[in-house]
Image 1: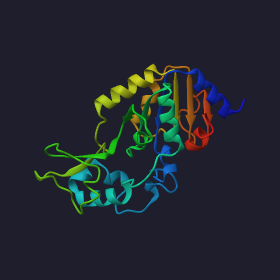
Image 2: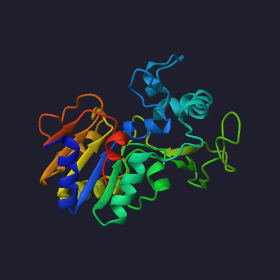
Image 3: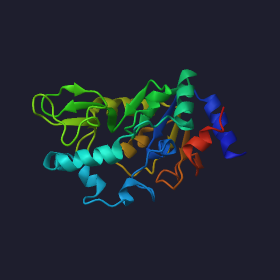
Length: 238
């Protein structure tokens, strides 16, 4: 039986599906990932991207951080692709119970998904690192240089920087969703970023599916592995 047909049959018979996704889900919307040939890790900067988006660097060199943020992290007018839209459709049908994402672009919500656990935060919110005051999504992009709050503190995007821990509520919600799922679809992620990637180990359900262009460390344990673009695969499903 063809892999797409197997996947469709499993989705049809499942009632508690969770999707765990990474950068590959959004590349088809024009958002570069960090580790592909054309990704951010392979472009030239004075500092490696993972250094720039670390907590200590943000505090030491905010000028460089904000310049990198505006140049490379802002998603602009990116729109949801077939993968985002299909997952939102599955949720409306009552089959998909949660999306657990490593992405920070907000495209799952833009496509209509309601239960989304954003492990690494979101670019759609900003807050003052000093007083906690919240700011809208465009606060940093419509200013120049270092963006400061009225209290003098740095206004930063509500994302998890390197050296920072994941949000406990998001983490707990993600673990509970995965533990209770009867089907887990892992897509568009190489599963190399921890602790996020370790969450898939909580799955105890029937069908574990991996959809990714390159091999992952979960392939040998998966019930079905499809080496293709996630949007292309989902566009073949009903």
